[in-house]
Amino acid sequence: MTEHDQSSSETDGGELCQACGLCCQGVLHEYVALEADELEWAERLELPRYPRDGTSFKGFSQPCALHQNGKCTAYAQRPGACSFYQCELLGAYLQNQITMDDSLSIVADARQLIDTIQTKAGSAASHQSIWQQITDYIDGQGAGRETVAGRHAHLELLMAEQQLAYLCRHFESLEDIQLEPQHRPGMATARLAIQSARQKS
Image (tube, rainbow, N blue to C red; front, side):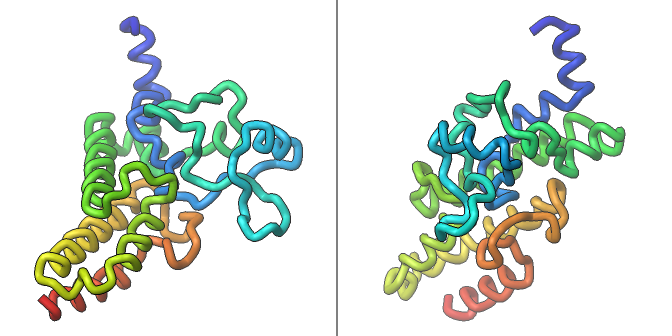
């Protein structure tokens, strides 16, 4: 990358987007809404339909299978919802409300928390959203949570979930996060779960 290219990438926020990708990975959104003339494109690429219940086709589910190794493999043909999307962190950077270094630090913190959650849940290879991975792990713990080690693992995962949910405020307001209610990062719910886990420890 030339000095000019690097300067241009920083100016338009490209460096931040390429380092992040959370909007493609099911962290902020349950699905990507498509226009009527984009549905055929999604079907051709065999992207999973949304909703999954067989009702009217609205878009495709997240995480996006086209996001690989930190890049969109269909970038030139990406739908309008992706082309025009701008998270609040990118907006704040473009309005000079936050520096690139501070923005990248927030992204790094979020990605580290995701790695922590996936390591504890054993779900690094999952194609589900991070919130569904947490739900599946907790639902599958069963009797394992009755042991001291199980309770501590459960508590550590919930703490990481709470921290990630809190970090999401940099990217979207809670009202704009397009997740099904049971997967929506709710601070009050996370706090109650942590308090309950601590009482059992």
